[in-house]
Length: 336
Ligand code: GDD
Image (cartoon, rainbow, N blue to C red; front, side, top):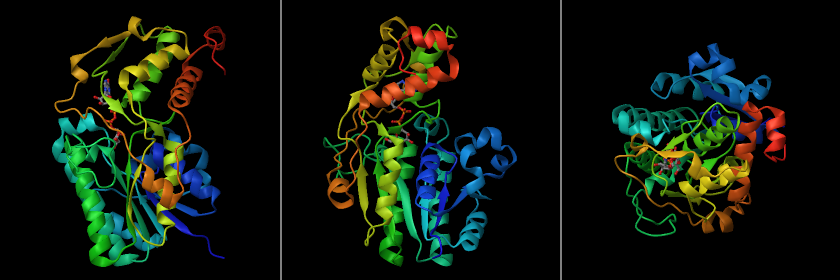
């Protein structure tokens, strides 16, 4: 039997790397779109998928170029397409609204249009985000909660979500959106607050830093583990009918709680190291996100199982392993 073919944009990111692993385990032929510069510098730019490179088919392409996406889709003829690539750092979207909107909205539109022309029976997944809820009107947030994005990033995700719905309704594409709440792992980029904290703790333990500068400690997020969230993406595309799903744990914690726990993993008190720095505050903050994953649970049979405390510990331990002397790690009582 022919292998099913999957195409992933953003394959070199945190989610892309976990999804590629999952699909390879399921015996898919896995294709990825990456920038040409990444193909030229795989050691740095493809580090998260280095261990998979022999098993993947990578294609040069860019979200900014319709012809490049059109060509890749036409050549690969995927059965499933997972669109994860985006400018995804909210802070950056305040610094350059134009490029965030342009890249994220056009990229999604280009890909949908290419699929409609070249592979109309391909199933499509769009990486929506809880940032679409922004200043949410209800707690917890579900698929029926109204969107009120608070950044150009959030606005670009609302536009991508609506484009996905429109291609489903207008052209009959099997197109689904996951409304994913924050999801983290040791593969998270260093700019996001969880990894900034876990790597900061490791550097402090190693004696390489004396403090950790953060912004708003009171913001609350629903933090899950990325490895589990990519399973929900796959499940969405296995359904007979396309639809939209909230993917979340249903629990919320503050940045302060994350920091407190992360420092506690190595026996330190966060109050001795965390310095509040106004530079890391956002012009418009999303104060509280917590999702209601009931629909994903009943329809997809998906549920988050990794607990917040275990996620924090895993991230801190992984970063300590990267920078600390083994003797130090033993002294800090880490289970490594
Ligand atoms: N990055 C960062 N750095 N955030 C900080 C800091 C800091 O020094 N100090 C406090 N925070 C607060 C932010 O103000 C925000 O309220 C919260 O920590 C989380 O910030 P991020 O980790 O940058 O993630 P995010 O919630 O803005 O967005 C992430 O999750 C979305 C899903 O809800 C990203 O992964 C998005 O791409 C994703 O869609």
